[in-house]
Structures are given as structure tokens and as C-alpha cells.
Image (cartoon, rainbow, N blue to C red; front, side):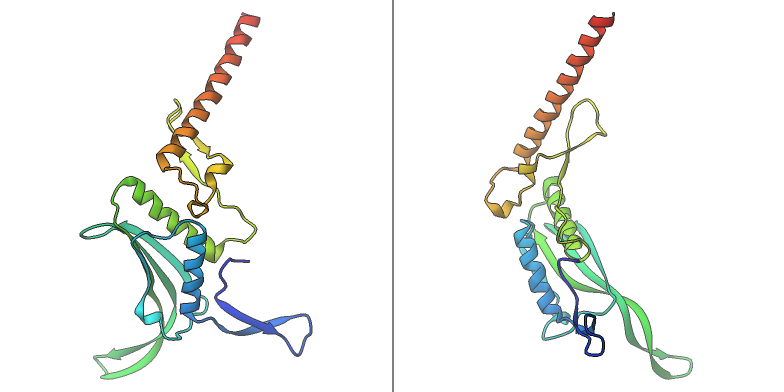
Length: 210
């Protein structure tokens, strides 16, 4: 099951042991739960994280909607994450030719929330993309899954990806104060040690059979 549910289900009075759809959840409650999730994952944007005005005051989260995340540099400063929902909505359309209007079902994409960091480095860009990853995991992941973090390091094989050690995947919120540079250094040292070990074995085989 996703970490954050967008629907409310209830027991089916006609068929014991089953459930039926009750209603959509309030958008502001979903945003509050998402905020808690990001804080626990150590991924809260450091400048701000705000719910769009149109989704406040008891508005229900749209049914069968798709969550979209976009991370990009701002026009003047910082890096932003924009979270949007794509869903089918009744839209009033006016026909100039017939001078009449009617309600039509259309797919729309509307802003749901925005987050910002003042930093503008590549490291800050990576951090904001991890925020986006955490948001998507909250809506589409599973509670039983463990998030893995990966880092690319220089080790003579530029396209090789090494998983970070388990202790380096602990959320920042758990008061592990290692910087990203520290973590990459540890991962790089480990990779070099592994390669040196492999090369040593290879030389021994050549000496044995050469």
C-alpha cells in the first residue's frame, strides 16, 4: 500500500469482510501527511514547502489523479520543486461561434504544492531531486520498501554505480551530520579498496599460471 492514501474506504454492510469506496480525502490533510513524510525522510526543502491556495479550506483531493513532480532552477534564485496533480475535471467552455457555453470533462494539470531551497549548486539540485523521489515514493511506493541511495564515484570505471553503505542511507533527520562530500569520500575509498583487492587477486593468478 502507498504511504499516503488519497481515498477513504469503509466496511461494506452488504458483504461482510469487504470494503467499498467512501470519499476522497481532504487535500490539506494529504499535504500535512506529505510534510510529515518528507521531514521523517530528511528531505524537507530548507527554504519553504507550501500548499497551493486552491487546495486549502476543505477541498477534496481529486479522484484518479496522477502526481507529477518537476525540479528546476528559479528565475532569480534557488531551486524549486513543483508538485502538480493531473486529473479529469469539469471545465466550462464557451463557443464563440454559437455564443453558447457548456461543461465538458477535460484533463487538467494543476499546481498542488511548491518547495524551495536557496542553494544553486549541483549538490542542491541533487537534493531537490531526492525530494521529488521521496514525494513519488510517498504516493506510489510501499511501506515495506527501504529507500536506497546511490552515488557515482571515480574508480577507473566512470559508468559504474556503487550503492552507498547501509549506514549512509540513514535519513538526515536521525542526526547523522555527515556531509554529501564525506559520504562520497567513504564510498570512493571503499570502491578503490575493492578494485585494489581484485587487481591483487589477478596478479597472483598470473604469477601462478604464467
